[in-house]
Length: 145
Image 1 (cartoon, rainbow, N blue to C red):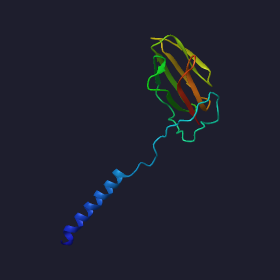
Image 2 (spheres, one colour):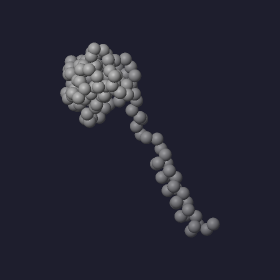
Image 3 (cartoon, one colour):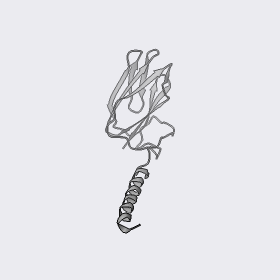
Image 4 (spheres, one colour):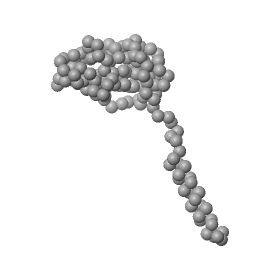
């Protein structure tokens, strides 16, 4: 093969290799880990689990649906950045009940057709239980610095 034909083939091979590398290289940031440590209702300076990732500054409203006294899909894990606004709606198909956010001491009633709607600034960092009274934990709220 002469050098005039070899040069374009060599350049094309290099381009293919570079494009392939860029498409197949691993992401520069690791995936967001899931936390599974025990919950507490007292504020702390930071979540106790070191694998908790920082949440975006502002999130859209979260909705928890309660059917037969239990959260659909299991207990929700919510993470917010300190200073952001927590927006949460809880709907239920059962009898009237109160939803309580421990640590922030916010409580609202919910009933079929009358969801409990929360909107508050996440001032305190830590891990907080969101409970459907009398004793069903429906969410874990982590507020990170």
